[in-house]
Length: 285
Image (cartoon, rainbow, N blue to C red; front, side, top):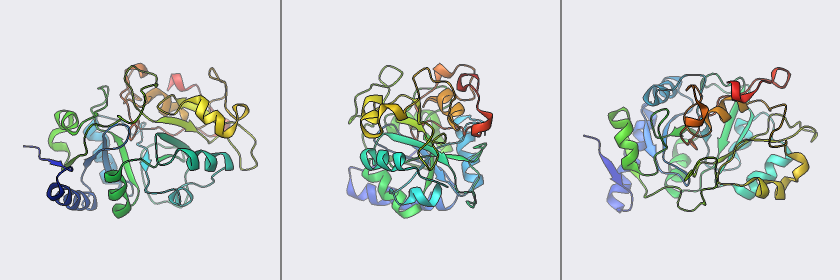
């Protein structure tokens, strides 16, 4: 029987966090609350653990999970380059419901799936998630649901779908309650995904919103300027976008119908994109 640790009870919080740290260190899976949806987490630097995460959800390696980080400084450790516009965005929206796709540090020893050299990063705005991340380091986190099913917003919903594939469930109450559901699907509180791989260090190029989530385009434009955002129908999708949009936070990158996606904020596993010289249409991925 799956044991869910009620983190509103101090003794259960302490026990749950201890077991969660142990599980992550052993390459096992943990379900955690975030500010958007519940996520299933694995050690980002353990290829075995990441594959276990994908298998638990019924996902393919073409839909690699995003990585949650404990703080903005981790951005420079994981990304090869961080354009000024991205620094402005994370200063404004982290911790919070914004996921940013960047080129990954080539020296990183990890295997998140077929990322094509990119990584999707987010700092969640949830004390339990941040506390665990501060102790474990970056975690590969995908929405806590089976592929094609709605994202879980409670620990119970996650347990109903994932069962004993997960070693530890941390119950932090209902997720997503701090946001207005303005995403692409009714009731969706997934993060907004911005692909920054098409933006060069010198400021040329554009940012592309590949999934509309809880952070609106208007709020993003207020920080970086509308001129830096690709048009909504935008041509030239920037790199890591193909899997991100098809999954649209919902699990379906890899499913036949991207619209059936679940809500991944940790969520939407974001498949990395092709390089700028081999851009493709995300809808076709």
